[in-house]
Image (cartoon, rainbow, N blue to C red; front, side, top):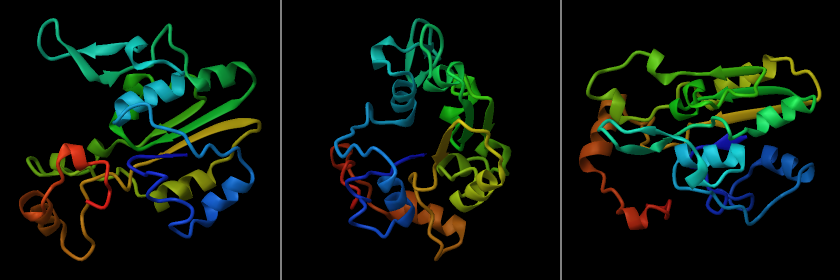
Amino acid sequence: ITVDSLRQDYYGLETLDCPFQKKLLKNSVYFPNCFSLAHNTDTSFAQLLSSTHLNLLPRDTGKRKNQIDFNRYRITRPRISIAETLKNNGYNTYGFQTVPKLSPYFGYDKGFDYYRYFNPFRRGVIPGITHLYKSPSICAKDLTNIILEKEFREPYFLWIHYNDVHEPYSSSSFPLPISYLLWYRFLKKSLTKDSSNLKN
């Protein structure tokens, strides 16, 4: 299970009442000093799933000639994902994704028998506004219910990615247009150097 923008040192087991995390902890190997390999989704997951250093990952060319887009990494040969390795060793592999940058377009479905990608761009959009807000394509509760209804053949590898806590946020206290306005016009944003402090 992976979650965009969820930091263990801020949302730790001691900080919140997380019964599911505690249940996992009792039946898992826990790495208290596990660090992200990069600062964003594109670069982190390509490295995580293929055990590959960032400089060895294929990436798209940029919009300009002879330019490389350093935020569009792919899992392509000779890189092999953990799902491919497990599938070749008899595992049934399942994936549920909610982020465009983890879509099959970038090779994240490789090695999965079943890969369901919830595309946020298939929902209704308001030009000029919706693209500013990183809303999840499906909320965690709905995604969890879909997963619980799915039958998994053992042994299996299951990868679920949640995106609900990704910024910027809307407030349930205000209608969505007002939330947009507050976030983009009036709330003070933290500087890049302060962005690691989630209290900001």
